[in-house]
Length: 148
Image (cartoon, rainbow, N blue to C red; front, side, top):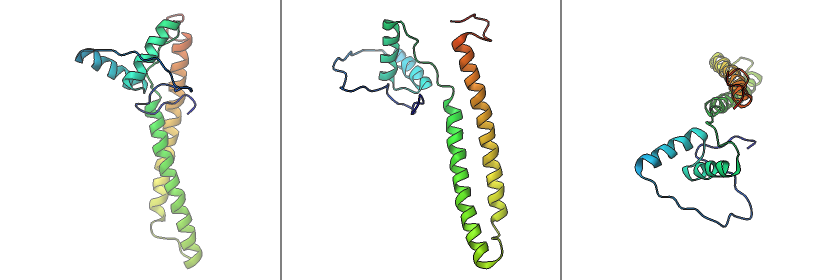
């Protein structure tokens, strides 16, 4: 999925399967903290724990909070609305061709489309902003940190 994880997705799988297993025992507070961090990154608790442990062991960056998830969900919902509109337009054209008059609900469909396109525009702006924010955090530009 080109870098985008499903909510609750496990980490990247590899073939052949990994043959070694590490089992952890946590108290309720520790588990809740890991589960919350995993949810923020879009991973399962097991996937998150493995990714963080490997990042530490191999000197890599641990998984970051997935601040693009809400924007991507909004884009998917808006896309669904636009597809529904396309179906409505096809139905309206069919009725117009058959009767010579547009259907009564055509104006409602146009309003729905206008709202969906506005949602797509807003989501695109938010996605651009989130990408710039992520790039600034990664490079240290605009953070005052001079890199991390």
